[in-house]
Length: 150
Image (cartoon, rainbow, N blue to C red; front, side):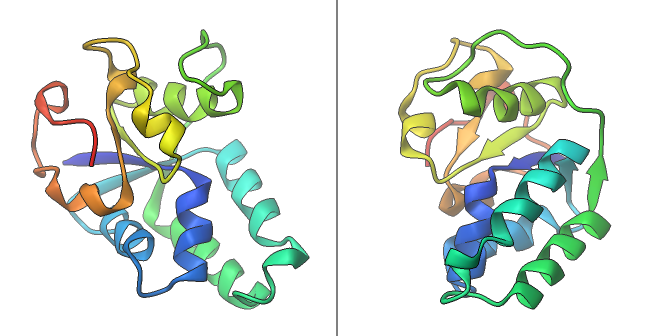
């Protein structure tokens, strides 16, 4: 079974463009052949981000709350990573990389800096995909052998 961590930017993009590739990635992460990995910190962050008034011109608070509830119901809530070394180009993204690494999951992100950063060769932190590439990850693929960028 695939294990996936979604960058909050994918959730925002899915709400802005409900027919776009980010929404398709969210749907794929909620599918029966995928474990969506969540934490309390991740859920708090995404809830706070989508509640911002600046997003109201693209999506309603109700649609944001509905999607967060769908993620909560469809995901597997794990403990937040407690400690982690710097892993990516932006310290704010290290949490997501550590979460994916600790749970043998891929990180799906629209953040070009994360997608282009080489990561540590052969490490679990190197498995990052764009939303459009998620469908190319075989269900039972040994993740270390999957191409990282989409």
